[in-house]
Length: 412
Image (cartoon, rainbow, N blue to C red; front, top):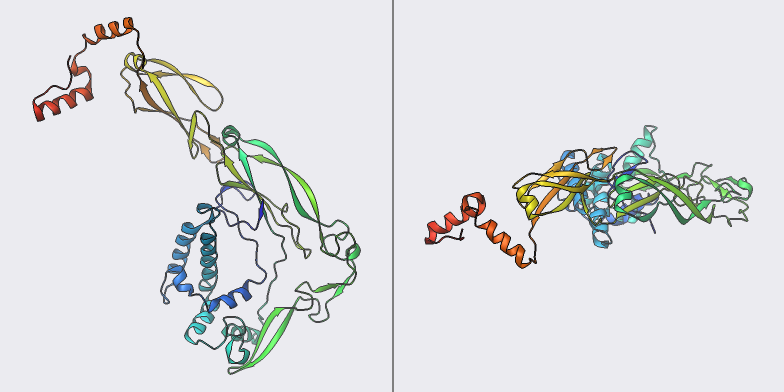
């Protein structure tokens, strides 16, 4: 079990099965993190675009790289995960006109302060602060939002081939941080032992004013006293020691729909880690690993069966029993069926909310490996009655060999 899983490509509804890898828990200090890293990374190079790239070019480059470095395609690859982070970080800046303008300014004027944070020139707040002051003058005001949501929990679950194909109910047991019932997740005794923050007036945000070479700028940031909560606990909850959550074992029953596949997943809202700051709990994300089957192979909703057919059945025609997901049924093999022939049985694949697949039977004609003397004699007698023209591929091969070397490939 691990927390903070990566973003998956959606498959199904918001609470159904999805394919691919789930979103990062939000980073409350994301803006500050961008500030520290901006002078070390070239976002245009990360996305592989020029500095004059249009919004559409940036969007196209981002989508291409996200598919290339998606964590689903590189499990347990730390380098790919870090590259994926860089790609999202670069896109967050370059896809936003204001952030991009501020970033471009900093790239063109090195030493004039960090992007969106404090830097050179005696603590110049960066070009992003100038945008803030401009909007502040028009009454807009730049705000800093803190995400107090709890972390997601990711669990891997193994499913049998049949359970995944037909759907099933599965119970999961795991440990998580649940909101403390005594303080209702606030961390304050009885949920009421706190007071409004005096520094920010309960808003969780404060304004920082700086004098720069461009004049006075105003920046809005997280209140340092209350950490953005807008309130301060005066008496901690004795049950959770002020954390706002308690560790508990949790059981959840999942209804896995038909058609689940390896690396598809289900999301259970609110069953992840409780927030340490009274916010919404994270999600439980269950990623499926489907076990192989002895007979069936699978591609999306279609099923494939490698079907051995005895040589006499292939030659004379007949019936064989073949399986679907529910039972076995008779299938007619036409006279003269060759190895490599594929028969399609429509509607006998996996039935899911996304449609119904087909069953494909791939024929392999099998000859006996051990024969008795009597069987050999009978085959030799029968073989004497055949002519080369009755074997299409053998006839073609023999003709080609004869035209090349004047020799017959077979004796009939």
